[in-house]
Image (tube, rainbow, N blue to C red; front, side):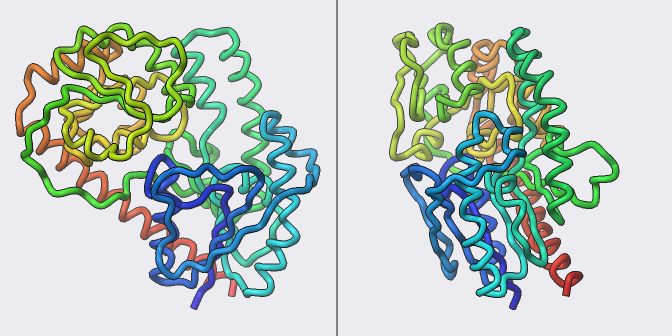
Length: 376
């Protein structure tokens, strides 16, 4: 049986944007012996629903020392964390050799770059976003000179980062086609694997008593800036509005109909009671996983042209994703024409997305298996 080792600085969870790690582990365990190493280079965030699929061989390695790598200067804000992760490379290499690991999958950019020197039959880097796309989209949304400067810096830096990664890996996976390298010479090493692999929910006809919900991790700049942009206008939405998620920015004033709840234990319950989910994101990289979450619970999505365009670039077209730069007016138009059919359409749209993403997950596992066979 093939042996596959996953490495990440994050624990697998069914909650939030890193669910792909959980579903990767679950899919690969159907055909391979799967190992998972948590590289601890600082406090591990304790969110709800951390879980490992059954049968995963789990271990931890503390990254306490610093192992400098000049190339990590390409990540000036993460340089110290990269140095800590890199200090574990020797121990992880021993683990690979001792357990006769066939393929190593480094999950997320920090370990993908810091541990690129690992030796294995097959190496894959996963969960890559384009820094240059992030800052370019931020500049287009804000016309900020600072964003323009950061975009100008990141364009050449990210090109160097990609060249380094392509030299060291057999496969690099991205969460969005928009983030993937556009160089034809790299195409054989590229795989796009999006989120949205939570099983579809039964279609519910229960009463929805919340007009609109906004949810996210509000310390994340695209989410924070979007919320600040529309917070004062939420009072114009006809009905109750709930704002869910941790780390709400201080000083935001919400109108009486908008209730900031912070982190809640039952996000699914709130979405299942909501007619509309508002996603105020004007810039970023990757895909907004929250679109998948909202549709899965039968919510119509009111979002920006930026978010909708990114989904369509990845083949995700849905009448339940409605775009406008005036999200309050957009939400009111949806609410005015809302009926039970609106929720049923959202459920159906998610089922279509799930089939695409589930198929790609299986293709990813087969691709790694084919690379292992080729190296034998």
